[in-house]
Length: 358
Ligand SMILES: *[C@@H]1O[C@H](CO)[C@@H](O)[C@H](O)[C@H]1NC(C)=O
Image (cartoon, rainbow, N blue to C red; front, top):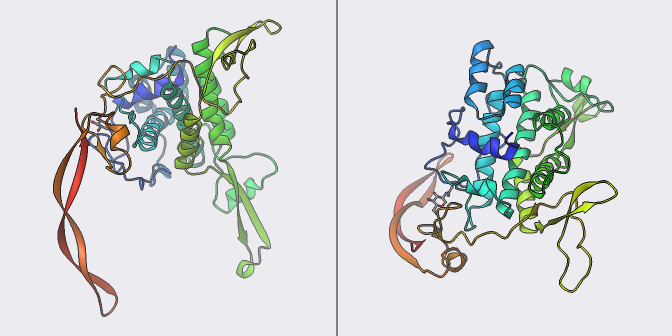
């Protein structure tokens, strides 16, 4: 069966469900996208009956996953939302890299063991964990609602109209959705599973307890606390840092446990294996290609816009860049008018745009 990362990125061929989100192509990220996703859907009821079954059939899932999807109203939409979220975040985090997360028609990468593959597995697992936990608390799922961990006054929180993100349900569901732990198997399976769990953990470690005071003029006589996920942009940033410091692994059979384990390769001159990767490390098996030229892994960097001071030399891989000038409008001669707004004129100035040669 396909593992989650692959599932999620195959889903992207579906158009995004939510209108009002930036469409996938052509689009340019500014970094100000609202990634605490899907405002305005909080009150939408899960799709009813037949519509929901049909949505599950349209998704590229294994047989088992399709069954789980059919049993869980609201899940198909959540999967689509998660796919969209992980793609947006991947493209944002890699906007200055040679590989910019453009996967259209180039999914060869998902079958390899590059650092980029590791990031894709982690970010898609993280996006699904995040989106599902939010879908529960937003009332978009039939089988889960708010976080109800003991110790927090969440029952009270519920009365005050706040509802904790249900990470417990989401993680449990995801582990089941991914299938039984595939024991030893091969290095590839261990690597993917490890990176998937790095993604889930990254979401978990961003869970915060938020409190709100009630009572006479902020006296805090009553305090309500609930659990809230951090914005997905923060999780994306954490995972990008893990990508930057990803650890290359090879495998060794643990004789005592009789299963395959991940190890860093031995240092030159050292007779023993390197250390085992830490649970939070992204791990990869093979060095990445340069991504400079079109291949089955990327469209290459020809045509990419770069910054002459910062990125052109590395992004263009030494091929050089073209310079074009274009006119850009901006606000100018602004004056404060009585009372209280600012009136500006539109001016035009010349801007230079640098793009990598093909
Ligand atoms: C990624 O780069 C390619 C050119 O190499 C470009 O066509 C594509 O639009 C870029 N994608 C994003 C999301 O910026």
